Amino acid sequence: MSSFELKLAGYHDAPRIAGLSRQHVESGLYPSWTRERVEWHLRHSESLVLTARYRGELVGFAIMQFGQDAAHLNLLAVDPRHRRRAIGRSLLAWLEETAMVAGTFVVRLELRAGNSSAQAFYEAIGYRETARVSGYYQGVEDAIQMVRDLRLATGSRREPRL
Image (cartoon, rainbow, N blue to C red; front, side, top):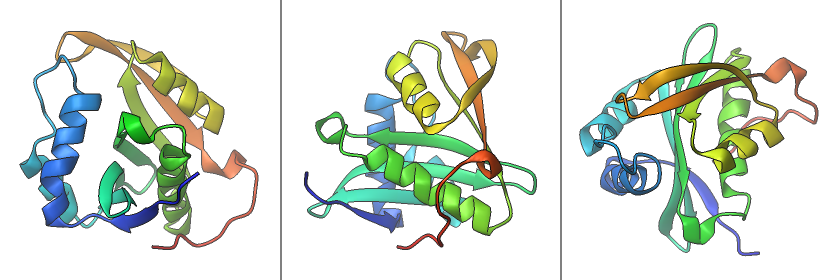
């Protein structure tokens, strides 16, 4: 298994992040995660945009917004050529640890109801379904809302590293 590196995103990453979202998250929808929207999260003090790089190439990313009571995972994607290498798990673990350091212990997210592999991924990590929202994705597809209480997670806690 080849190693990858987690790094905070820079503005130069915004077009690639938007492209990965368009291809692998928003396929069949009008793209809402544009370069400008990603850049907004890069500027926003309560958001983190984290990337995974393999040999310098951006192969995955996650965007999380932190609130007082909960964090919201806005987006997570890994290029299909690099899946099943623990990249998604690593991105999410880093952001969850960051949330805990900040004193936020609940993470919420939505995913496309038709994306059973994503649902299985989140369930395997400890997320549970809380609701289904009809037509959430531009009236085209339903969403599954999921949540994880990080206080219930097992394992050691350490500060996230870049």
